Image (cartoon, rainbow, N blue to C red):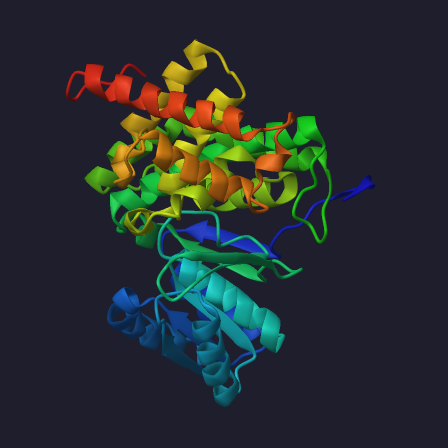
Length: 377
């Protein structure tokens, strides 16, 4: 890390609002015209019908590609071939984090403009200059940095509202980690994710704090509104926090213990069916325990996560809380460059194990004592 310089990175443009997808032709023309559009498989038919109407109206030439579902080396090579054959100057991705990460990687490899259109607010992948790669079986492979953020993030809040509420909740879990991890990295002096790592601009810390403040104030209300199909100001604010503020926050400040736990949970195949943000949400509880935060804060955090339908125990991932199991998680995290080293103190195997055990115990204690339907927030 170069600690003598500060650095801040961001997408060129971010547009959010109901019906934003229908503006894609205008932006495609501005970026150079012909577009290849990678679309999540489960959205493909409905999205192609909508694109046909809007792109024809805008007189923009385009082709569509159905996503293979995984962000893997094989999928990236397949999409690169199809985009090259189409002669596109723009690659657009519509869908979840893995589809968006493929689109970003293809843009880097083929030196194309990139337009990212998330179909949910489940994570902050849309804004970042990174792609998280997985093996074909869904297990974690590695994270690749691209150097440039997307040229345009186009967030249609009506599409986000109509996505499953579980995805919205996962985005809250991912975004909640932003300020916790920013604080750890600021204290330890760990580098951010701009190029090879720099010190944080104050803007990055401020964005991370605003992300946390929005979630603390609006997340529970926004969850209720999403369940009811209401596109309220709270929902719009949390969409921005989940996608933009969390993305800018983590990339410009850094990740720490909360994201490191994600690596350890992926050791167990049964955990691979859970969402990134769900794993990170439990990681936030783990990090708060690891950092010896107050019991008052831990109680608030467990209540908040539960109110947002996010996991607070290992059992909720289908993982038992026996010592051998937890030791496997600990060893998986400590054996790789996972972010745990960004904490402002050395994290030994025993310290990690004790924090994980205590976080799981706090979650179990809460769930066992909770009155159904009650939140103490």
